[in-house]
Amino acid sequence: MPYPESALIPQRLLRPSWAEIDLDAIRRNVAVARNCVGPDRKIYFVCKGDGFGFGADTVAGLALAAGVDGICVGSPEEALKIRQSGVTAEILLFASTLPQEVAAVLDLGVTMTIQSIEMLDALVALQRPLDAFVEIDSGFGRFGLAPRQWNGAFERLRRQSLIRLRGVYSHLSSPEDPEVTAQQSATFESAVQDAARHGLRDLEQILASSRVMILHPGLHYTGVDPGRFIYGALDRKLMQQARLDPLLAAVRGRIVHIQRHPAGAVLGLGYGAPMRLKKELRLAIVPIGFWDGLNHVPPLGRVIVHGCFAPAIGRRSFQHTAVDVTDVPQAAIGSVVTLMGLDGDLEIAPDELASTMQLPLMEVIPRLARSLPHVPFQRPQSLSLTEENPQ
Ligand SMILES: *Cc1c(COP(=O)(O)O)cnc(C)c1O
Image (cartoon, rainbow, N blue to C red; front, top):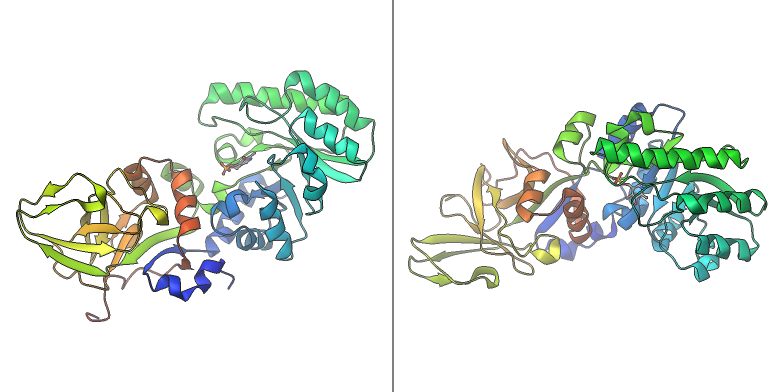
């Protein structure tokens, strides 16, 4: 099975911390997406950020096999990686490059985004056949043609033949806010109608990213461009509403060191202010820190070890997390520690980890996925057992 390169580095796993990846979740989530939008709409799967840290080529290949129609990327090297893995499907490059570099970018075999008049000028000047989408700014305010710009652009595009306009797309800023969404989607709708008025026909019309797909079925247009939906990386409520499975199933490590510190000892764990122990502390160290995608501050909350919750204490350091196992006498060198995911009957949900880290889930998941080595998701029954203590 194709796992991202990090799984092929056994030396990394000699420092025992890892992400458990349920690659089959892609197939299941694509089936949910297909069911959600119906057989005739296009699904463009967003593989930006190296496929949210899971490996753009791996996830693109699996999603295409499961029935998505196209891929979106956020940078040229993602397009290159996906093309080199043999993918021939359309790859739409989101705005990310300089107008003067369009020739080199097009050599990668991508569909360009026209997000500005400058980009349109550069593509017209190139005098070479190419595919492109026009991006509309419906209120996000980052990229895209504004209402005063798009009619002129549509007219120029209609009057030339080298640039094949494949469609128009836009990205909504606040799918959870009905008022903002009504306003922004009305702006997109007027761009769609203006394109038709200029005689640009058979265009793909794409507005719905993950949350829009779930919350606004009326905005599915001719295609959708989900990212987090397919990775199963949405907040718990939406995950349950849409019945999605997480690709990042668990984050775990093993205890590499245990030390007893007597009452009265003063510890400066994780570069924090030294704390004086009121009672004896049995401290376990797991080799996972902020370099691995966790945070330095605030404190991490809790982990699961041997079927018990145990508090993580102090701050994370660069490559380590400290856990108070005073009340978990079975904890030993080699014990598996779960920082996210299921372990027996207990769970640390992705939302819990994100809220302890005080970061949005959409930031936490790619951080962990891109930083940790990937191993196949293991059913969690026997996790807490060490080799020394098999029953
Ligand atoms: C990131 C992004 C998406 C996908 O967003 P999700 O919320 O992950 O579905 C779609 N379109 C654009 C332009 C984006 O930048």
